[in-house]
Image (cartoon, rainbow, N blue to C red):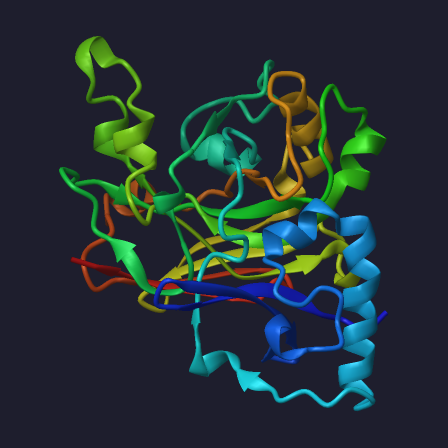
Length: 301
């Protein structure tokens, strides 16, 4: 199958979906013969079974030059988060053996599986100078997470149903204010201040359908650099709950919908492991997970 990805281009307050083929963009709005013209990525995912074949056909036509389409370099546009905006962004915790070990915890599945919600759409941003230094923190930390994109709704799903519902994957950064998560009265958790302030959930640079991946999603290298220095170096094979298993557990509690995104945990390499080398204004983060591209963001005032 011809390989492609999907992303969302931002031009001021205007957002439009685009095919990504060989690091070039093809806005769907310019592909006038297509039945997917002017649809957002979220709308495409809401009828994924129908739209996927159209997107595959468009990719084949563009790469074979049977469809005239003008490419735009990824470097010449501003990208939003690939799905603008999902109904839900959820995140699984305590899911990598090395991360549990660095926290001094047993490297085993927690039962029940912990997960939390990051509801504000303003927490989700794309690549670039998009991460605003959060208010009130002195311990701004990073995590690099394989992020599932759904193409079907799920409720009380089986493993097979959950696996089938996965449309593809992207890279997510679960940025956290460690000192604010437990700053509430009597040590209560404060997820909003600690994990959901504006710009704390960068995703991208694009979403790749699972049919276009040439790697085993359960054995992909995970790497995160800060200012060129490797901070996280692990693999998705460390996951205790595989992506479809995460979906099964979540679907017992929450109805998942097409277009929803689920971050699935991080390997070891948090700032605390480097003597408390917390993120600062001007820091550049570069995240890679297998062949899912490179997500680059910068922390700004």
